[in-house]
Image (cartoon, rainbow, N blue to C red; front, side):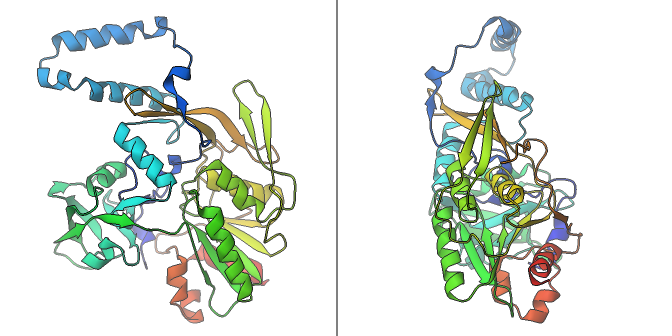
Length: 416
């Protein structure tokens, strides 16, 4: 993964999209809502007066637009109109509309199921999608796709400058089908075509490794899916059994997850008090207390965050910070702090609507503010992020020379 971050499109938070997982919005928007589905019929009827101009324009389009074939796809026009409304609300990347297919993919993602080639994607400084890393044993890795590969085309279509979620939509697909990527390998000048057979991608929500020559356990939370607390508890117990004396929990590039999992994960480190507060449109506050029985209440702790840390991952970081339970190191987080209520519409599409707002235990706003780390450490263009799979293969000297300034700062904080 060396030199990968120099490829990131500066000024835009790192999108970590699991190929084939879903096709809607930024990863920061991906989860974080209360685990319930509210039928659309339960929503209050919207006043028609405010929509009179919209319907006037709609009727003119239907009656007069020259491309009659385009008018036949009224569902797509309606979907585009709904997306325009949700975008105008300003809850960037969180409140959003999902088509029926996207809604199904969202459910699969929250269940920890992924279908595609098995790789993390980012955007480089030339607005080209590239492979941050293929997953071990994934179809992408088996086909010869490498970390740092730039994706020029998908099935012959130029994807340079294309929104990353659109690229993901083109790459994802049903198990057993093929997709051909035109790839430019790092340090090579001639692109190559690589055909990958899509499959279900089994990705652990949690992985971990010891920092070389230490008893510091480096635990990465990839997502707050329905199994993250179970897997994290197993990782901590395994690390403790092998003599771990301190923990680094990495939620960099973690787009969020289920609220109940954020509470459970945070509770593994907290003795009492609240994990978060929730404020509704009327200003009413609801508190979510720590769940008893945490297994790492006293172990020295550092939490790593960055611009891609969002939603449920921000709840976790904010709770650790407000309780003075550990040191938060890295960069200011994305600032996704609305609670999404999912409304299932009549055709199977879904409206994910921000109906209340998360606050940290001390009442700090997360939405649009993010979590400011206790120690700010930025990564320069020539530095790269390590994951436990990298660390497992490193010697102590290789680790010290690795260039992940944030992880090195975490180790220093726990060693001082």
